[in-house]
Length: 319
Image (cartoon, rainbow, N blue to C red):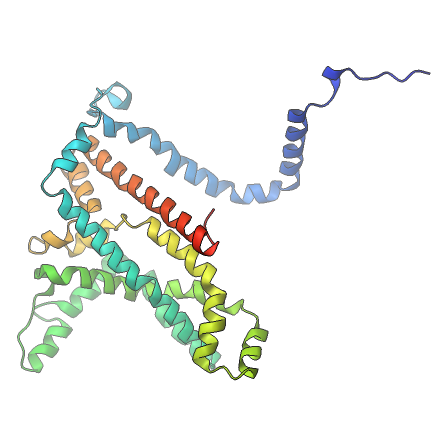
C-alpha cells in the first residue's frame, strides 16, 4: 500500500514551528506569566501609553482642541529652552547635585554594608541594620521637616549648639552655597541603610571557603575585604552604578521644592522644578513637555554610554 507523501505546502513551515514552540512555552509557564501580568499592565498603562502625548513637545498644545488637532511648531520650544538665559544655570544645578549625590551615594552604602558584615553579634547587626534603613520609610515631607528641626535659624538644634558655644545662628537655607550639601547629605541619611541591604545580600552570597583560604594564607581583615569581599560584589556595584548614572538628570523635585526659597534659588532650581513650574503653574504644557523630553533623552544617552563602557571594561552590564 502506497503511503501518501505530503506536498511542500502541507509541510510545517519554519514560521509555524516557531509559533508552535512559543505556544508550548506559554502553556508551560502560564503561571509565571500570570504573576508578572499586573506589573506588565502597570508599565503599559502608566509608562508606555502616555508616550503618545510626547508629541505635544512639538506642538502648540491647546486643551480645547486636543493633542491630535493642536498645530505643529517643530523645535520652537526646544529653541526657546536652549536660548533662555537660565538654561545653563538649571543644567549646572541638575548635573552638580546629581554628580555630587553619585560620588557620595555610591560608595557610602558599600562601606556601611562592609561594616555590617564585620559585626559578629547577629542581634546587634540586625538592630543596627533596622536602625539604618528606618529613615527610608519616612516620607519626603517628614524628612524635610526633620531637617528643618535641626537647621532652623530660630530654634534649630544646630543653631542652639552654636549659640551655646558663643557663635551666631545661621540660616543655612538662605545661603545658596549650603543647598547642595543639605540636599545630598540628608538624602544619604535617608537612603544609605536601604541601599546597603542589596550589598549585604551580595556579600552573604560569597563562599565562606574563600575567606578561610585567605585567612590560612595570612591575609589580614582589610586584605580579606579588599581581595575577597569587594571582588565578590563588583557585579552588583556595577549594575547599581549604571542604574544610578541612568538617572543622572532626574533630580526629584519634591524635596527640592520643599527646601527651595527665593534666597537659594540660584543653586536650587533644577530641570524638574522648572518643568513643574512652567507646566503646571504657568500652564505652558508644550514647553514643559519639551523640557521633560530633553531631560529624558539625555538620561537615556548617558545610560547607553555608561552601560557600553561597563561592558567593555568589566564585562558586566545591563545588556
